[in-house]
Image 1 (cartoon, rainbow, N blue to C red):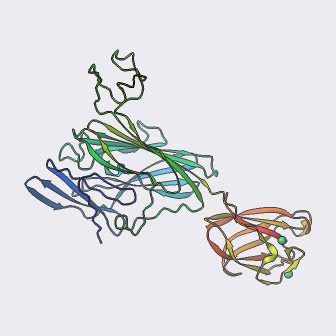
Image 2 (cartoon, protein in one colour):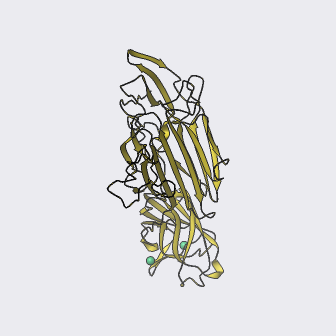
Amino acid sequence: MFNPITQSSSLAGVNNERRYSRNTRARPTMLYSLMFNSNGCIAMKLSQLMLCGAVAAMVSPCIAQVNTATVTNENSSLAFTRGESSASFPFSLPQRLEWVVDGRRILVYPSNPSVFINVNNHLHGSGHVEPYQLHAQGNVLGYEASSNPKDVSGRVTGAIVYTVNGGAAGSGISRISEKVDIFNRSGEAIPLTLGGLGWKPTGTGAHDRNLEIPDISGLDVTGTTVAFVQGNGYRDPQGAAHSGSIVDRPEANANYRNIADNTNPTFASVTVYPALSFSGFNTFSRNITLPAGATLSMITEINVKKSTINGPIYEGESFSTSQGVVVEGSHLASLDNGDWAGYTQLNFGTGATVFEALVAVDPQFANQKLEIKLGSPTGTKIGEMIMQSTGSFANFQWQSTNLNQVVSGMQDVYFLAVGSFGVGNVDKFRFTAR
Ligand SMILES: [Ca+2]
Ligand SMILES: [Ca+2]
């Protein structure tokens, strides 16, 4: 089912309440209503509203195809996907980013208002950006200069650069950034609703239904968004035009004011909004008015690393069900092939990836396996630890192994001994991430 999204009198798009429309009253204008259909792709109804009345036309119900550009850097890649245009829907709007770090996919949604830029004609890596950058540009929807949607001399134009800076292979560390500029050449002030790169859809809301909710479990995601508006043709009393730069250039024009002359501020046309730093999803949201002749710039940086959660430490001898094992002093012992011990409701936190255990293994019995299962001794195996010699069955050392999947929440866990006799003794253990 279609889900119409309209809002008059603004070019909008709240980060978690996607609204795509624009309508100004004083002149013939275009009203665009974008909708997400059941596949999560964008459909559009375009109505051209004239002063004397309205002429409406339905165009393509769905952008079925996509078009993607990808760049890589170190352990990371970044793919930018836009909607594909068609004869009846001659626009391509930014849709999503797929950020892959050491094989882990992280879905990221572009900021507003970058999602209004018709990037039909210009999306690429390399070229006049760095090899680890993507560039897209075009007219802002509804502000084309002509009926040709590929005309890039529109009354409001926009451009986006995405950058990916990966870390060393296996480090799990990476960074992306987005810079979007919106240049208002329309001759009139326009309202904009800003929303930050990396926002979270609800998946069920009226305006973001069926959008995939990014999975960031097991990851520490942090970021910052800054936005500023500069340049609107401000002229000082001598008539010199100022572009809005905050760099004073007295050598360029004797009439440029010194920055200390705050009785006649040179830089009145620069507006810098408070920066927002966030953890997890980006909540940056702001309504602004972009003056005629001015440029909005918005920059978001997002960093990711593996979570450094440390789960609670459990005692090996605290099992609630078992077969073939014994408690010896303060540890689990007599783990022979086929023996098992079960523990109820262990905490894996927001996403554990590592099993750590304080174990003792005699060298003559080393290198047998302790399998880790969910739900029952024959349940899903989430990992196995090769029990390495610690010198004796009485000498305990911490050993660890990576789980074969990310496990979160509360789980019933079973240890299953695989080998022959004397796989090892287990004093303490925990599930963690790093
Ligand atoms: Ca036994
Ligand atoms: Ca113990």
